[in-house]
Image (cartoon, rainbow, N blue to C red):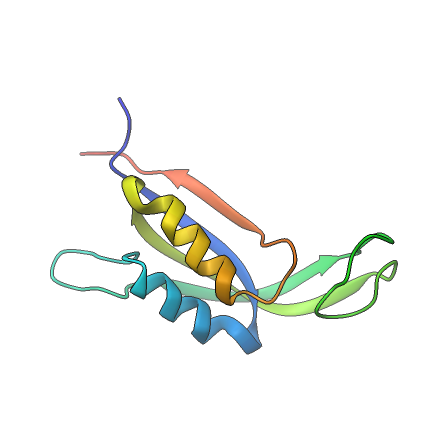
Length: 107
């Protein structure tokens, strides 16, 4: 049985966290009952190194980087997931946007 909603989790530098949260809400993510724009955030450190084909928005290609990021989580109806991802990518500063999608149980 396919789940109706998923948990969408995206990692974003602090400088763009508000813009990503806004984009999520505008795209229809984060609706719980009579509330909208619902999300949960936690902070951590994202680490990466781009190869010679990259043009990172933070740091330099070939160099290991560490960036303070927010992990933003929101519930998304499966039928609008692609649109939510497109909207987030349109405001996210990274070339490669790191995100996770988890199925939610229907109880």
